[in-house]
Amino acid sequence: MNTANKKARAALDRSDERVHHNESLSAVFRSFVSRIKTGDLGMLPVVLGLILISTVFTLLNPVYLAPNNLVNMLFDCATVGFISLGIVCVLMLGEIDLSVGSMSGLASAIIGVLWVNLGWPIAGAIGVALVVGALVGLVYALCYNRLGMPSFVATLAGLLALLGMQLYILGPSGSINLPYISPLVRFGQVMVMPDGFAYLMALIPGAVMVVQGLRTRTRREQVNLSSEPMSALLTRVILLTALFEFAVLYLNLGRGVPWIFGLFVVFAALLNYGLKRTKWGRSMFAVGGNREAARRSGINVRAIYVSAFMLCSTLATLGGILAASRLASASQQAGTGDVNLNAIAAAVIGGTSLFGGRGSAWSALLGIIVIQSISNGLTLLNLPSSLRYMITGGVLAIAVIVDSFARRSRVSHGRA
Image 1 (cartoon, one colour):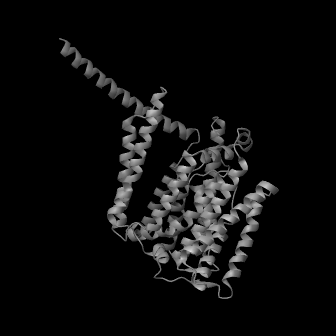
Image 2 (cartoon, helix red, strand yellow):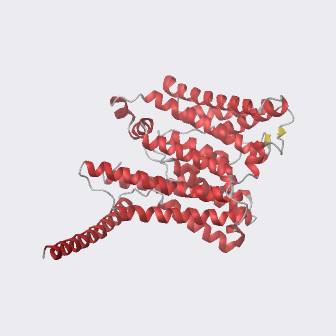
């Protein structure tokens, strides 16, 4: 009789657990819908935008989704993507850097002059370029902190000054070709990951999600707070891993996953960890949300601004170096045109707020994929650059409008 009661009790417990999990999954879905209603859209607009863009351009030109075309797109994403990562840092504070394009162009010029013309080791040339980028960011921060100069004005002046320096050091020739057989140029143009390594890398995001999810569940359960059901966590991990593995499989049908894009993803992950998991990152969000409140809470606001501007200029420098490797040249046109627009647009389209206090490094990654998808699709259709500028500008305007409405919704719901 006791054995029968125990079996009945165990069956009842399992039934209660299934009901609890179903209710928990339902609660997770309701929470997701509630966040959307209150203006917390997250990555949803970007994902929907990518689906729409891919569908339209594939119908107009089936080559758009060909594996090798997507590989070329990823090669192109990485160069401006690094610049966009830096833009995320200053936008988080509600500021802007309009000189990132000129900074990237100056960096490519420094590489060309020191490495090719003067015969410096490539590592030394890259080091000098990065130091110059960091110093430029420091100057912007000092102008803001000490002189009260708005970042818009300081970086606009920097745009002109850096462009002038770029033209000066390049000299009358205006262009320097980089050795095509050099590792730097090959990295930017042809190097791809081995197939097995790419598949292995696609497993890492899911593994990280499992570790972080279990750690979060443990901490919340220790203080008697509700936590995400294990079934919901595993579902997200399985779907995400399957998506990444399929993407790698499809890209391997062509040339494969570019190393330069892998480096970009690594930097995005490191920056996102810094923003979401460190004291510095929490301070960035606090200063961007309310500078005075952050100062009163003991945060060194000036140091936060210095770190953001220096990181922005340094990442713009790195983007310029990779752009030079991608083009195998340093020229007067480097960093000009739509580089500034695309870098800023990528951060905003990806979900980083122009008003400060909200964003992530992943927004730069998703945003630059959107921008490059549009550019690539328009190129395949042989449309002129004039239409490309107008369409990209329109997409940026839509992203800002969505961000503005989302911010108003969060304010009305008390979540600003």
